[in-house]
Length: 446
Image 1: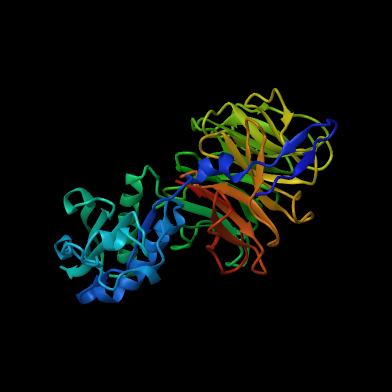
Image 2: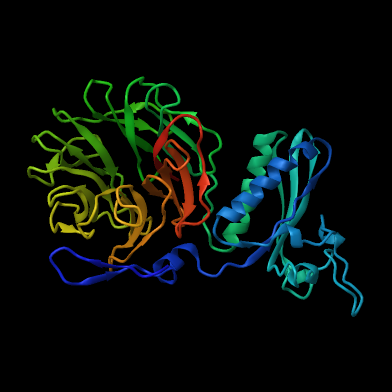
């Protein structure tokens, strides 16, 4: 990425754009090993499900950001289904796909190979899956995974098995897979704005709220137990909290104000911060989990919203404020002290989202290659270096970090109307997750 110099307001200091080899490289893992993922075959009732299985496995490994995918056009004609299929070639003979060097050598040049087969057994989808390090000289040292996986004999079961196989592979490389994580978001597909959820890959979309009024701004407790959002159910924007497990409404006290919104949970699960206009202007307040024991954290004739508590330390807060003019990114302590501006003062900033390790923050900003439209940026909080991830593709906002700290969900109107997308933390592997209705404000949860 080319360097661009910014002049900070009131200071003749130069702030450089971080290079990809800087903190972005750390977030996405740097150099990636090459993996070959040939399509597996199935027998019996499993045969019709192999397209779903193969596409899911490939997508999970490709979008993980952990591997470079070997092009399938370079694969050998012969692909092993079982370890017994491997045959060491005679000396000086050309290696085939039935030996390790057939995958390790050009043109495939892979480090790892997935293989196996699926079958129907007792009405179940059964996968026999292996992962081999093809750089090893012999089969004994090559095997890394040899496991049987079970699922229902339908698309859901085949997809589940593929997710589990991919998750086991990623674990070997110290990567937390996204299988099992959820994305909550706002959708208009039912006629009004409601909260919906889906799997990390866009599958299994479900409507969560049925308030039939504007319901927006979702947030999730760090342990995934509570879902909070802002709803106009009472006529004014108020905070409602649900149990994420049962969807039952949980107690939360709203102050008498024209607006209570943007709730953020502390990592200890005991405190929250939200924005309220009880004093006339939206300022920030801290409270217990049920809204009691309220403490005012900011005050002034300006707007303070979108507070996000550091998920690692719980000791500091990022928020958006108009106290200096156009809305900018600020940081303060959890007690409301030591307020400092983090952005340069140019353009407008919104939607801060802490990285799970508390060292980085993603946000939307109108500064960049397309002024006037929001784009997604990430910043190293310690030195305030930042990188722009989206460029020239409409309006991009509401970034939310995945639990693995390597992916970001965001909303974009690049397709004509606002939809939910995901991408790696270096801005690559952009993937559209929703298509029905208008969808925005994603929040990624464990």
